[in-house]
Image 1 (cartoon, rainbow over the protein chains, first blue to last red):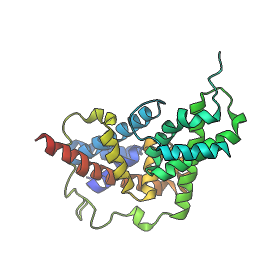
Image 2 (spheres, rainbow over the protein chains, first blue to last red):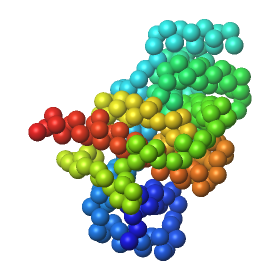
Image 3 (cartoon, chains in turn red, green):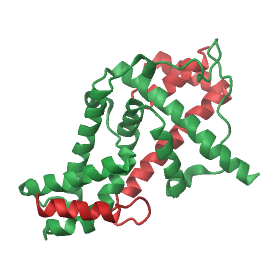
Length: 84
Length: 194
């Protein structure tokens, strides 16, 4: 069986490209038997999902929470736009 | 179809400033860099107003400009700090695996129902902190892939690395980020609950 170190690398790769069939089977078999690696995969997918949702929410103009420009920065930018 | 509203640049800062800044902060994690790129975006917008076709909204057009500025910034960082051997290898003292490649300390149960995490401002702060702890190459690759949803070919061009190296970088970035979130967010919230 593939060691966990290799399986974690393949789990990550499978999030970016499709693995060749042999490797895919190797990972599947490993995940059926390894609690830690299947937890690892679930957690990476949760992080991906969460990050993408954050990006989608942040991109709505007027969405209130989160970081805002400081007044100083706004003033500085306004000035630079007046004399570009 | 009515043309989308087209505002005078003097209104841009109040209208789009915070929005563009938030967009930049999520990707750059540094206030002053984010402020600079928002400013550059507005200036480029003024210079190139004719490229605004009115087919998209003004804010989408400005975000498009900002996106390019962010990619340029990543390109510059990659040039200044090219990939090093240590970016591609597990540090001996930080590898979670033993000599035979099995977990020494496996991932812990994150419990509960963390699906709503994206709504929590504090989680976003922790995520930003964890990403800032990675090397720029790791953080930028993760940002382009997971936040921007860019494909790997595009990311290789921006960071000027091979696809094989990108896979290693992304793997390392995900592993380090997962561990950081576990230690600083999930572990802490379990303690609070028990």
